[in-house]
Image (cartoon, rainbow, N blue to C red; front, top):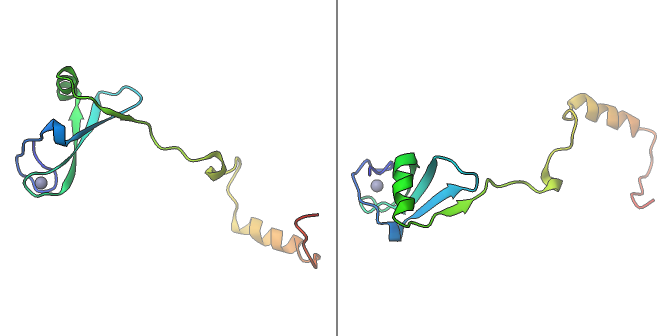
Length: 103
Ligand SMILES: [Zn+2]
């Protein structure tokens, strides 16, 4: 295998690497390891043939799903606020002297 960081040809020992696959079945995975040549953490994409070989010899992958935001962190439905919307809101607040959010 070629290290994408240093370009050195290396051997990755599976007891010192992590094979990450998606929860949704895909014909590729990522191999996370520390390069024995440059010592840096590295990631290589593993395609279908090598992935099948790794799984057949008993490598246990780590299955991770794509991270998702909490519902409260998602943008609301509808068009995004524009500068004109903010200016209009300020104009509507012109007649307001005090705001009591608990009322
Ligand atoms: Zn390297």
